[in-house]
Image (cartoon, rainbow, N blue to C red; front, side):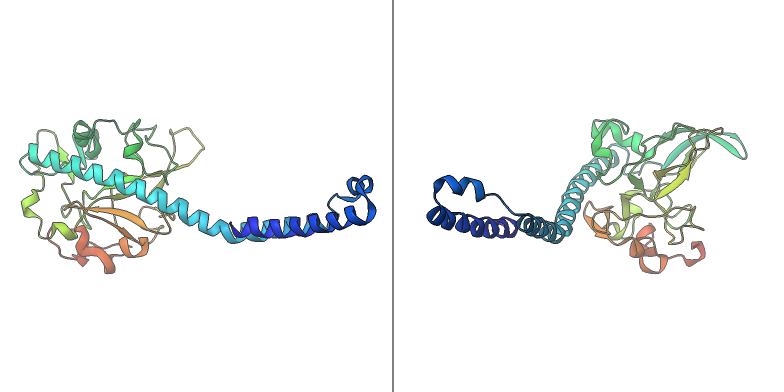
Length: 280
């Protein structure tokens, strides 16, 4: 029996015992008249329920976070399998974070994103498949202004610098080689796909509404002001799940994950910190 049920049973049992005494001393006809709960007894029961609920609520919150974390790790594991199948079919070259067409020296048109490369191996699209989304993420899955992806999972395309991750941006009609899996110095210690940070965007240029959406690209930096104004709210008991290039998954506190001094080598394909690329 739970502590809450035991406490209520004690109060009810004590009350029933008093009712039984009244039945013996005052008779059956008067028993029904005097057998109700008093206000004090009701207040005691309510107080016990409130205290036990307050004691149990943190445990329930932790249990929910753990369940969501388990589901999230399962989704990341499936994404890791899809990434591995993509590598097998593409000469062990990682997908680009974004593939684009240059329109001018300062503008471009996105043609593809990393998750689109993985969709044929995952079986579902980014927008309608909960397997692409962490249960702890409640934001949008598309950016209305550009049609680009947003969501709970992001790809380590750039590392701590533009050419240090798992293939940054590929350009149409230009030679931008993708990163080979064989070139990774420490795949068991390099991030591949992880839970995203948030950033603010407007649905369109005329909208006064600002929405927080998840970046689909990973990037470090602990300052929400200088690092693209991107906070990292709590997930799964204050940890962020991360898929490594060898397929294993680890839950890491965000202040460790995004802090260059703690994790820079895990972002880069050569397993070097490259402090010249750090920004806060």
